[in-house]
Image (tube, rainbow, N blue to C red; front, side, top):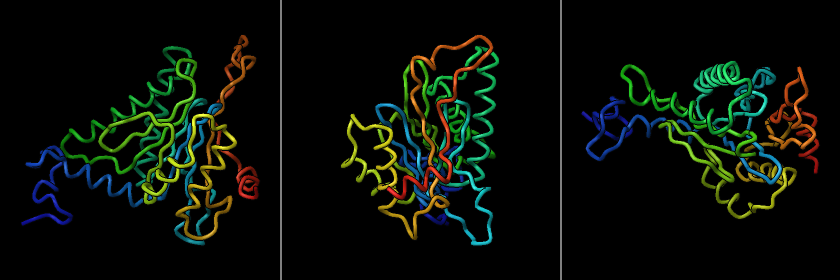
Length: 252
């Protein structure tokens, strides 16, 4: 008897390869990501922008509790497409990893280090019995003194890549095509925010407002800000834009 969605009996097993060399449950997890709302990230010359649709399933829901862009530590933020509860678990794990790193080294982790640790968490879920893959893809933006600003994508398999610009979710293909046409290496952060909004608008259903869009930005600190004063931490480089700031960008 074949399992629904293809893959035969191998659809029910996470840790067994199908004869074609696939772990079918990972493909199902990617299908969950493809059914999620569109999210994207763009790397600029002076920062990184993360943007996503934030749609409420009901008019009665308090939208202030919805969070799709999540700060992990002062220099790194996440956005996701896929299953919200899985994202919440990964955010909690990532924050613990970042705090553990800070306790040992006295600084927050470089972006690539945190990406590798989160990717390891997701990969372990593909190689253990009694669990399933995380049904999310992540876009991770950050800044550190080693590599500067960077943008990574992590998939349910635990694979990760560094990107100049990427899109995930239901409008991923059109979003990437649009970004390929609009992206250039000289893009400033302000232009990247406008490009992100235009990309989301391509496949957006309904009206784009400050309540249906969420944006996070990574900014590159100035040399003056880089000079750490005794007893003070470096200023945060990642933050979420307020609803007023999003409204102002939409009005342009």
